[in-house]
Image (tube, rainbow, N blue to C red; front, top):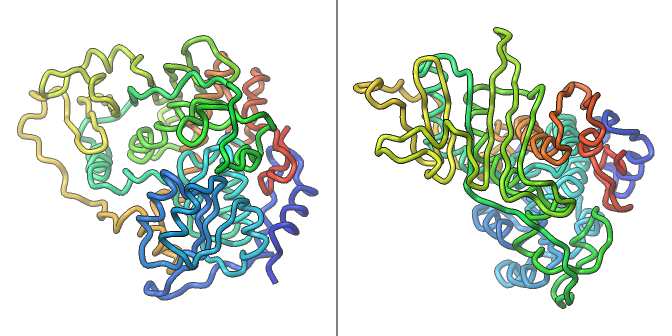
Length: 443
């Protein structure tokens, strides 16, 4: 018999002892059974407003068993559309009561509750779809990836653009050597989630604020957080960096088959303890076989590196005006891309260029990849192994910014020897009852 959520969490917390102690009980939960692609999955959604509702609408033809949300406004809207589903305010109660009925779980909550909810689902052998960034801390990302691997379940992180044709064609161009060896990458976004400040306000009747806080420290209800602006706060999100970089950095991560960076430095406005900055710039180094590291840059909030500002696209417009994008710099030229287009630069150098024939098959659809994987064991393109590395890289940039020192680390141990504040920011404390399975309360 599979362990209950409470039994598994209790045992894991007794055994876990820090960042490296990841307990994933691979022999206690049987791998999910294979099924016909036509069989319906029994799915629960945790977080059903905004992006959660979008995910529910995209997952068609399956059996929605339960919905969970701390806000009754969103919960009641789902109940009207799916009256047969059971409603919950607390995801822990959902797992305690109906885990045995579930095949899969969709997690679309605020970032700070991704890992606590996802880790329970994985520990109980459930397939999981989780929104980006996969987790709120680097340590959580490593733990979630190991849990998913140990239980051999189907996983997918919500970076929907990965399934679109444009990203596939860009990956093919880079891997074909169209611009030669890539030695530098710039990625950017003009968006700005910033300046979160805690201002006490009157609690609305539709919201269970204590459950919304979840693993975070208790505090009075504050305005301008739920439901739309929590990304501005370190306690719940990671600013523009954490919100958008998983989408944009995904393209070079995929094209260049990146693993873990060895260092990152970051700069921006003066660090505020509560809120993310209006802009940030970061530079990573990834090791390469030739010994010369790949330089990988990120910028947001409209404050971009000179090459992004000075490089012009085919129409003569600065790349900084694209809004978001990726610029690959190779020894034979450059390639710039966003979600839906790409250009080889400079244009005259590539006149008459014939792209390689498509070699990466088209996706059956971002959500359909996951559903098919749940049923048949087929792969997904953004599973938690890949998504974990990408999320760690993104979050390590926010760690470097918040610590205001370069981060040079050993990714095999998650140890940063010369930056104690950065080491501290790799994890966090959890309120009792909202821990991450296999990680404990944090160091």
